[in-house]
Image 1 (spheres, rainbow, N blue to C red):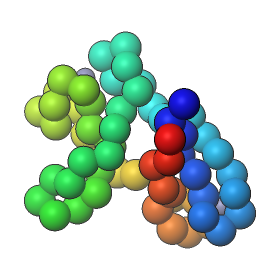
Image 2 (cartoon, rainbow, N blue to C red):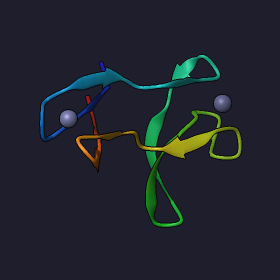
Image 3 (cartoon, helix red, strand yellow):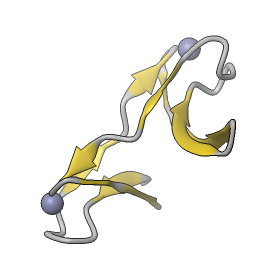
Length: 59
Ligand SMILES: [Zn+2]
Ligand SMILES: [Zn+2]
């Protein structure tokens, strides 16, 4: 299962859902974002921070 992982402390969190499915990582304007499976026009958000750095999408 794909999770958000903090490289610093090892915390794992579930990916947020959009339109009934987990979001995935995608580059939007050269920045990594979490994007809905329906596309960025449906939903996009910043990758959550943990220990003051963006978490890693792992799975
Ligand atoms: Zn969506
Ligand atoms: Zn952390």
